[in-house]
Length: 230
Image 1 (cartoon, helix red, strand yellow):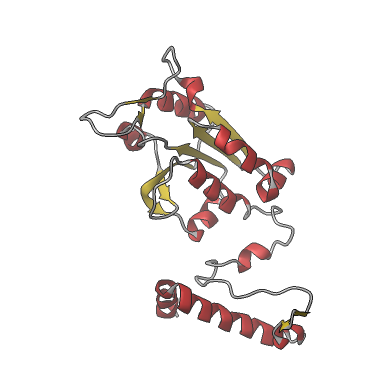
Image 2 (cartoon, one colour):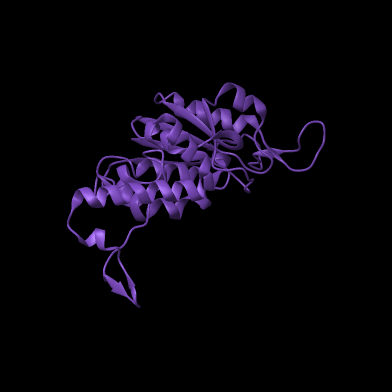
């Protein structure tokens, strides 16, 4: 898989993509991640990439020229399965989106910044817009990192235990239940006996019950959806 990320502040992206699961996936050639500085494509003599919005109002807007130039440069070299814009008014990014994108070949992310991007970019270049929540951040770099992490960890070989991703929250439309590790007793608190019983069927049933209860308490919206589909 290849992922290209376009940003006006590429420094925000460098370090998180070099460590942990994403960093290991890159080192093991499971994914190529390329970061593009939007200013490198600006035709302005001062390398500006933003300007005031037409009609007035607060904030600055990313101008279309450097974005068009960058994306056209990349799309002339290869086809992209999706060109994604990270925006607070985009479609909510969920686990099923990560699952679908994890089996693609080439992805591109455009990170908004300041007040956003010129609408002509969104109308003509973007194939998908995603939001990671109902709040506003300073830019699209953090959402892009969140989405890239959620996608890359699903690639075959990215996790030490290939089954781990399949048991994550949301993979079966429920939240994951509690997990425990050694020691079996810590400061008077004990691991539930069923998890130490060696009875795999009982453990499976217990985990499902705990998952149901956790989802019911924390995310009743997901719980209702799950029950409705059963």
